[in-house]
Image (cartoon, rainbow, N blue to C red):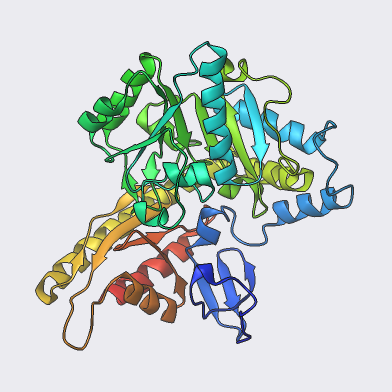
Length: 403
């Protein structure tokens, strides 16, 4: 393997060189095939090399790659219209990433109250173990103190409360509160579902004038079964942030704005040089075209039931087997194709613990790439095109790895 010495070492040691991908599979430099259940960390909703995405990229690249937001860009205009149609939000702003989308949403929430003669309402409340990005405001909103270390002082105006602690949430809301930032499922924080009581509290606070910002960067675009993960919770946020699968593998983020938020913004209030890049937007149109097709949607929901049902049975068996050996296998978490379960292996004098990294290695040896969320949760993010045969392959490999 060639040295990576020229790359900043913020991703830790890496020992797998990927050479190519096709569908739900990737191949390493030695030609070994792996079932990809990381999907670029929930980016590759259509897997690798989907013909519709590839064709859209090639067609737009043959016209122009970039022209700036000083002009009308057809693919950008059309993607905004499609997102508005699918979501019911009248206005869309395009950026380049999820963290940039969250930064913009914070600005828009504060601008709304400033335009309403309430500049004192500027605080953003988020939840512990959340993840919202690496730029300064998004980092501060991320409810994981380990990520703040060495980067202070952090911006003021952000509060974090315990996830799914309704009493703590209500105590935190005050006269300076502008918005509450939430994830329908905390993907990076351990695949933790928002509880119904928390959703009910959010609806009540929104009715009192607090804005809701939904970070749907990993839960949106049908990853959890519905177009937005908020739909399953009965929530209609004021702002929604999207990214990851939106660009089909190219950098693209978006903010969906309600009418009242959009009405508070004027020309010059925000912008992005590369936001809404025409090639990325062309890819986005292709992604939405495939995923929104009614036939695809019906088949996808059938496959969600098949995969999650199979996993529930498998994890129940693994938990019974593991109990005698001191291994803990938790229940299925998440929604749709955002999947996780807790795994704690038994430690011994020779083995410091058969935890998630060891389970990942066994899966990789069996030809499956999986991801970790939090300290002890295995996360599976298969492409939304994952076939029935690939579901069976994953279940067989996971059953063997857990045994």
